[in-house]
Image (cartoon, rainbow, N blue to C red):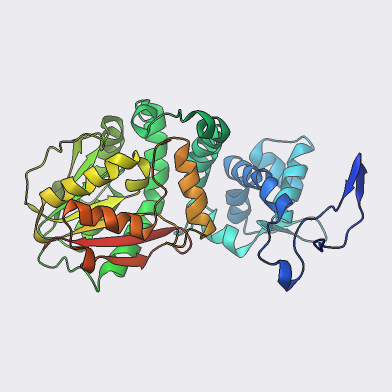
Length: 370
């Protein structure tokens, strides 16, 4: 039986086909919107360009209802292409256009894409996704065929790449760290904890949030050398007492030996690290965490993950695929994959806990050392 799609005139270019491949009835709701997926990169680039040109900030600064000439002046683009970009942003619902041609922000654009908003993460989208990962994804087919891709260590050996990535990640990681503290509250108490190990801690965002909340806690961050350099500049921006209790140590996470003593830490955190190293290294990471923890200590693994059924969610699935372009031999994570490797490293498999974190994107798996 042929599929039924949205009614639209056929476009006759050689063969005719429907202009829309979006399913329109309940029977087809689980089918792919081919065009929506295939052309999605165009909409994302429109969003990145809007951020780069300061479109969202300009509208917010003016209090809304901004006309085209005003946006031409603020962006420095006077050619017709600016109108084309604005129309694309309206069509993608990032902007709203009145009948007299004035532009306003959508609620989500005002909340997440304006730099003065406390929920802003446009720098992450612009710098890390738009300038870095977007271009890496262009190599996906070659990586799939050849298995050849740069590692994060080689990618971050460029100081500019490392600094851009780390700075862009910071604001989003602070918000995620606060959410993680709340999510783990019923499972892990840090009231009596004194030492934390933050493996692959990037800017130090999680360590700053954890130590800021628990004044008795200190944290040691293990990171690549160039990331440590940027992380220390961000550390210098933190409150003085947090600066004193957070430190950076240089480490490639794929190294079999960590520069830390055994059995001294109450908590080991690995956020966004398990999916960023080759699959054989994942188990070694958890084994090193087990050695570093005190009896009764906890390992927190937070990362992009799909469900154990391996059918989604989409966000976790495509983030795992993105990692392939900088980690060709990595493991697409699901809770059971993490739990099984924790068990092999010595953690109590029967006590492992899994929690949803960022809806549709990340999960938290907690390992217990007896």
